[in-house]
Length: 226
Image: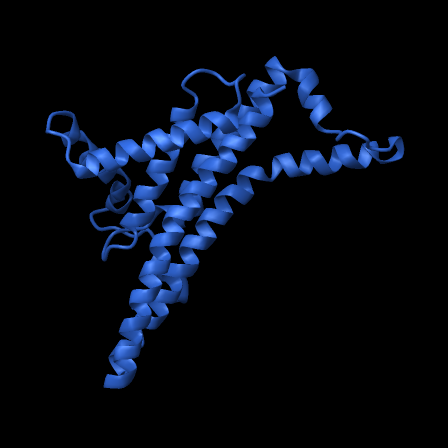
């Protein structure tokens, strides 16, 4: 019995084992056969997407970025995308709708960027706290504002992804709970609405994965480009 509206997102599992989090590993199971099988259309599609993302992330990172750093963000994009899409299938736990996972992705990346920047580019990090042409009287306030903006970045990244995934799933759950008491006409309307919401959620899954990866890339470029 559903105790509250958000209980459908509770990561519950049987046998005292967190088997629902294992859905995040389905990506590895799906990718492994591509190493010894003849590449099909799906593998070629993933390769084309990877090449397109590589060229775009490489442009965002700039010429001063480390070689191969764009592949980190490509892997991040693919990981979030697969988890978002898996959540659209019945009886599969949506791991990307929990702050536990999204914050675990955003916080280590942000902390590594900050640690790398303050150790290797200390002057650049101090200069970044005060924008150009800032009046002298406003400099302390700008330092405070920029510091707070940098600190809340992992929170905004994780909450943005979690909130967008929860909102769509919650709306689909609410509409799905009305099918048992609905008449035939209302039932047909609910089915059409669910199909439209499923299409919208598929687009949201791609957009949110792309936004998370692009914002992380931009945060990294602020550290490396100077």
